[in-house]
Image (tube, rainbow, N blue to C red; front, side, top):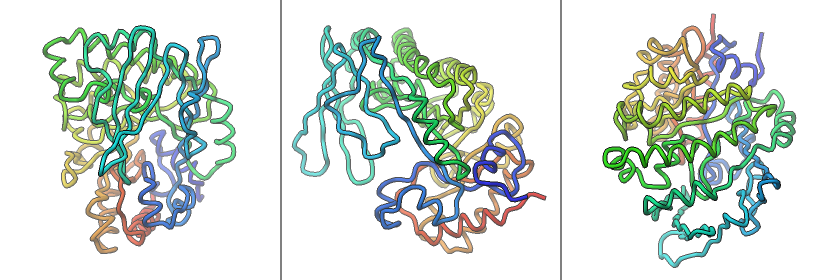
Length: 389
């Protein structure tokens, strides 16, 4: 019997065998949609290409009893499914544009009763990055720990969007990242605030300080997770590339990443939600460590040709009976400068390596910006031909 996209993706997410190989992608980048898809919306792109759709939504709500409110100085997000920041009288955020000949450059200042914190972000047509990290001195985390706000999930809005999306696919969100620029995983959030090189050195020079920072960030995420009960999410994202073994050692992962994110996954399950643990980069030395945290799915299984280390067939053998696997496709070599035949053959190889027994969702290994729409259509079409017997 033909499944809907939602049924197909959920079946795989739960480790089951769907009617055929589910095929989707991670976030569709604005640059890709505007440059290659005539500005189509996300759902229009999914429909046009014949993929199983993903609807991302992250609506927050403030808690007035904690003195919180939406940031009045922040522009409304262009996507109505995403929320404005949550601030308070003790956690005020202002911004100013800085002159730069190449990139949009903005300095953000967080004003608190015990001092100010600043960070600088730059953007181009592709993405945004940090050029000045928020936490510059160790004492800065005391300010964060005392005054930072903690967003809560707007369950009503999530459920309205989920009902409207219906059977078209999965409704996804993320565990809240830090204000201005942050990431779902606790370590990844800290890396954005401190800088990954400085953070790694601190794990040797002052590990207690690193644990204190991670505890502050974890506590904020716990508040958000406890507010998720009743939200009709299908899966939420946790993790981040700075926790991969492309960046840190398995030893650091086990000491500074797993204890914090495992606690969050436990709370997510208590709230009736699912987690996809996102590791864009090296994964093979820590496959069992990630699986032991008991996420519902793992992604992105980036292949060596893209700078990762994922050996999909080996990963399937080692952890495929414990979690759903998402990703593994080399979008760099098969979405551009490839023939349709080669792209289709790559799909078949991924199905052969990870599809047996279900519990696998074909997806590019994380984001892409440039892609030939014909190759994307071939990618999706070939996946639809991969049937389970």
